[in-house]
Length: 422
Image (cartoon, rainbow, N blue to C red; front, top):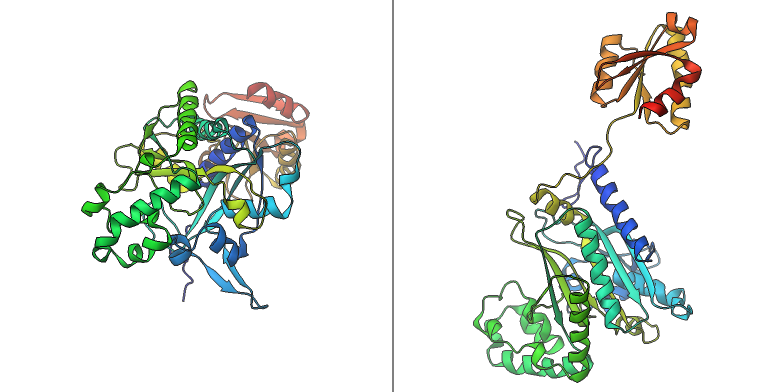
């Protein structure tokens, strides 16, 4: 009986993993330019963190978490998203006490959600996220969005649509919440069981329902923008002005609702408009969450961030036909003839590697022709040929695999010769 890979997971093999490495490195470079520092949190946390931080009415908490008891009978959960874990670390390590704020962090790592696997969606997926904690300023909202757009655009993506909305402050949300209850309550029996349970707990989540999105009451639901108080209106207007100043194209969508309970004020999603990308177009989502840190035991601290799936990013690149310039192949492959030459090749390959070249050799005692075929398969730029005759003269023959030109080079001068050629 063969052991199969768990449903909703994937093996990322050589030939594909290089693309992951490329985009992850690009994410780190962009974050460095914006002065965001990497943080790494545990892959599992106490379940209570996500109940309080993500929200008990969310689909993530109600349906998608991988939760288990450890040997101490403690309830633990594989992290389904990164923001709550970063918030917990912010509190645990008293980062709120740092004299310089905001605290600007990013993370890249696996997340886990039990959902129906489909194209670009897995039960284990890799998320890149950014969090800016400690400042309540529309300018930092715009900075986070500028970082997001810089990352996607630096990879060559063009068919992007940024959608923004305001969920308002607590006062605005409470007024909108009551308006939603009054709007849906008379006919809530026509909605799914999830929506019925959300009516009193979090009616805003009804607007995010996939089952009832075509119900006529959805189209006429009260808009949050009609319930923003003066402060919330001014905040949102400033965010929009900064985006305009930064030449970031966006559209305002008053129906945009994020799936997590901790959002307020700025909320946003980035979507792909590439043909053939799929029915689910969202690439990234995020927003401001001024109540999260206090909810998980810290002081009142504003924050804003986003998270995106590397899997969906790669799908968007494929949909737009973008080939990333990943490095493949080896610089030099050593081909040998004879036992003494084979022994000497071990030190030659090591010398090349220590000089910074990607180098390899045959380990299967193949014939010379087969060794050259192996060099082709690994896309070697140069082949170094060493036989017993060459060894006696302390030279090698270096063949440029693109031009076909061949040059006899002293073994002692091999590194310097290759450095001049590449």
